[in-house]
Amino acid sequence: MLTEEQIEQFHRHGFTVCPGFLDAHTVQELLREAEGVIAGSTHANHDAERMEMEPDGAVVRRLYEPCTHYPQARALADSDELLDGVEQLIGPNLLFHYSKLNMKPAEVGSVVEWHQDLSYYPLTNTDSLAVLFYLDDTDAGNGALKIVPGGHEGVVMDHTRDGYFQGRVTEAMDDPQAALIEGPAGTAIFMHGLAPHASEPNTSERPRRTLILSYRAADAFPVYCGPMTAKHDVHVRLVRGEPARAARFNITSFPIPQYKDKVASLYELQQRSREGEA
Image (cartoon, rainbow, N blue to C red; front, top):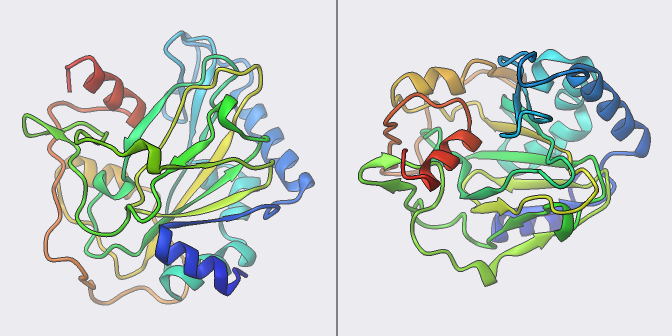
C-alpha cells in the first residue's frame, strides 16, 4: 500500500517513488526471465514482434509485452501489492494497458526524449499511469528517469511539427525543473500518464533495465485516431473490479496524434523526428 504522503505526492507532482518495492529475489527472477527471452538475438535473427534492437543491431533495446507473454512479469502485473497501489491512485476498476522492458544496454542505451505517454493514446479521461521498476541500480550515468514535477496538470504539451505527431515534445522544455529519479534495483515509480518525462543515453558500463507497466481506469476509453488506436489496445485486460458500462470524461478536448507513416515504436518515431522525417 502507498502511504498518504506518496498518494499526495502523486497527485501534486505527477509521480511518487517507492524504494524497495521489489525484493532482490523478484528482481533477479524478472531479469532471468528477460535474459532467457533475448538470449542469442541479433539484428538478423530476432523476433521483431516481441523485441526491438538498438540501431547498431548488436543488442536488444526493448522487450515488448513481457507482462502479457511471460509468467514472472505477468504475475507482477496481476499482484495484489501492485494493484492495491494503482487502485489508491486511479480507483477500484482497473485495466492493464501495456508493458515493456527498456533495456538501455551499457554504453549504447538509446535516449528517450521528453514526452507525455497519453499523447500517444488519447483517452476519454486522464486516469492513466505507468509503474516503472528499476531492475538495476540507476543513476545519472546509466540513464535515470527525469520527470517535470507538476507537468501533468494543464493542457497537453505540443508534440507536433507541420501537423504531424513527433512522439516528443516540440515546444520549449524547462529542463532545470526536472527531477532526476535515481534509486537502487527494486525501486518503483508511479507516474501519471501526462507527466513529462525523458532519459539520457546510458554512457556507463552498467545496464539500466526498467520494466514499465501501464494501467488505466476501466472507464477511460480510447479515442479513435486511426490504426494506432487498435495497436495500443491489443493487450488490454481487466485486472481488478468491474468493466465499465459507460465512458467517463474529465477533459473537454485532447490533441489527436496524426502520423505521417506507420511507425514501430517511440524510439523509431523520435529518431525519425530528429532526422526531420516524421
